[in-house]
Picture (spheres, rainbow, N blue to C red):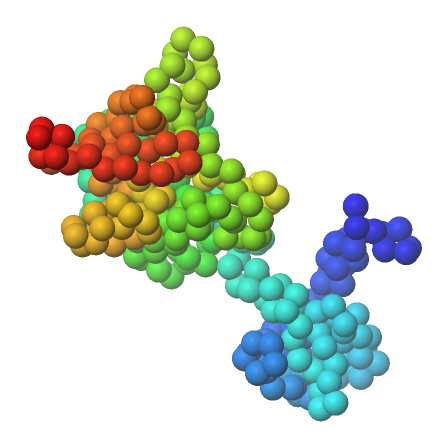
Length: 306
Ligand SMILES: [Zn+2]
Ligand SMILES: [Zn+2]
């Protein structure tokens, strides 16, 4: 544990320094006044911040400002500016992840199920955007999500409050798409540490319980796990490798943008075991094989027949 000389963990001291309405207001003031990042930021003067926060008592104001200085706030010759940890605190609050109980009741969206073609509906609750099919069992079989779930994404409340559910749906899937591609490239988009990719063929799960994840009704998915912060995501291997050949070319040719459309496209393809990995067949008969290292090879039906 990263402890200080006094024995208190550094994280606990940092959180204790934030335990004040006045100090959070000081960070907000500095964020507005010195919004350019790093060395580009302007300084804000003592009196400007004091006026923004609305504390008349100079002794009281100075006490609170001092509690933030060095870790969250940097003192300069001309005043104060926000240090990166202070900026991070403001961004965390604006994502509303700690405090908001925002929810969006179930609404139909203009998309269809990749399994059955049925209508889809989306709801937001408890920090998750969950999309389900109204006509089939969906992808995820778990007590925490409704029957028919085809997609479940952790997403900040700020992304749905005041934003239509159709737009929020598009953005959430586009953002997670970006995270997935980074993680499939070998590192975590949240913390910068290494990521382990595990292909879950799934065909033998009924007999042995291994080789798959019984929570998913689709074989051949990939699990991406960060070795440090524990971020874990599951998706289709042809979706997470969309920025490399041959998938990059496939998606580009069809005009499929990052997000739901790419995911839904490949989730509809047939999946079978193969000698070199998991095989997926697109509607035109092309076979795409993914190995344990997420290398994708493409076999066109014309080439195979020669
Ligand atoms: Zn369905
Ligand atoms: Zn991580």
